[in-house]
Image (cartoon, rainbow, N blue to C red; front, side, top):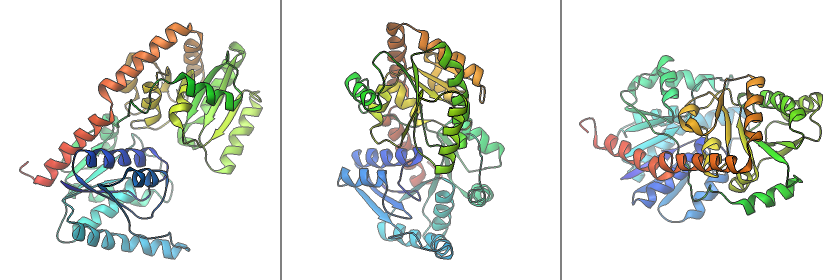
Length: 384
């Protein structure tokens, strides 16, 4: 199969990482893969380029327009450029992600000769700013002309259907986690803890994700303020970066809550297997998720987890972690108390069960195989 993947950028992000893993996996299964982006560069672009043959990377533009009119002109011209690249590359099926990418992919595949297109939708709720709203609404309006829409969570698929998305067919394909990359590695974890100045007998609770309101660091910090007096050896790490103003706002909230000296602001990291191994407990406090990669990664590393009841989190975590309501610091704090109070042996056994759950049901191989089957059926046509 000659398959094209399309996403606007291959920088840091859950969708970007999953599409990079998919490109690598499809190439490994003998398919010809061309990865189209609007712009070159980014962590996942570099990772794919280093993987070698069988994975062609093609940016529609060498650099972003210097002015807003120039950027808008690039977006307007992108479908024509993408359609030309699809024809010249002999692409049999195109798979896109995120609303801007989905819209541009649909427009490109309307130009003859038409290429079958599948959309990948990644969230279970929509909290859109003024830039995100137009492509979302346009995608909703044209969704009835899309042959296949793939969601990474059953919850997300139901939400999109309630919002008026009506593709001709649908599928749920959970994200894939590589258990060979994300695995228990105490030595790597100790190095990270030493780098952060975390004592050996401390209990390290981490939240991993970009600093954005949707990740609800504010609730995490309020829960930490409840836990801190009850667990004097607990330390809290915020792994991820975001706008400077929002980062300063969160840091001020932590200081006001009396968490000075108890919260580590780590910033963006590229050694996530080691970071997960540094944690005693992972906390996911998000208000919106579909399939949160950080949850699966922490589970694969054998880390006990507490998470809010969003997306398919309850299905992913099952009985091997703790699920709490969204935006409830008291419930989140109580769940953290419970896991931190477990003897070391029990906490390790809980982590082992979490890892087994990922290996059995949420591996990269499973994600690639399921996507391969869906795209092959789409390429064969409606009769398939």
